[in-house]
Length: 356
Image (cartoon, rainbow, N blue to C red; front, side, top):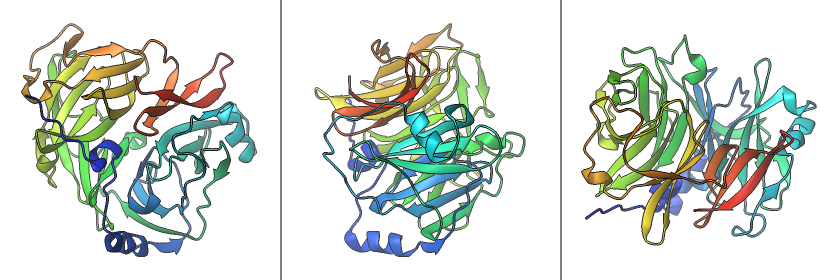
């Protein structure tokens, strides 16, 4: 019988730490100015510490946001024209900017957006509180720390950091490196030490009918399967792969188990884990195949896919038909997700939706 044990760290990507440990983490940050060249991924840790992946600089920053809850954490969120709001604050137009990442602070329910200019370097971080108020996170003289990735991909630098999640005392980072197995997962201790070169990941891609080591993980989520901490990682076109956390050791070449092929011609965007009616599901936003509700029942006994498949195989999913034009997705609380979506006029909005 399937035993999926989801603690707070697995569901939210954040571990609950003792008060003294939290104080140690906060005090490890030193005031400095953070100058972002880009912001391709966001993740939250304890004490509302925000991790920012700057792929252009191949650097990860940890910053103390000082975030505190404003408004009812269970209240719905609906912010129309969010792209115009942040563009106005940057003295730009919506066409001049792009929202590259979105993450909910599980401690407060506030939503954080990474915003970059469409042309040229530079990025900014914005907070949207539960009342809909939008403010820019000041990155000058802010408690922060950083670590540089030593072997980040030079040819595909924009994909050197594609997704991040924090659990217990570690930040997990996906992206491309210059190693033989370019697809790389790193398990970085926090407070930061010198980053190692990570683990090279090999997967079998059923739609392509071959093993691959150069495709980047687009998004992943942390959870336990029968007591074993794992990552579920999604790739373009769209294999879903289980990777045991204990296998992620510096310099190791790791073979993931492909537990689903979710359809070709598609790129996954964001994924979250949630429970409903006693069952556990994955909700995943995609470029071409809408928002998927993926069943996890039987995942521990799923035979890895090692042969070519025509389109779909492994874990089953259904398409959430009333969720369209979703570009970003994260859990807002136990019953709701928040999505960044495009409206009929092309403008973007933040909207809370019930977990299906």
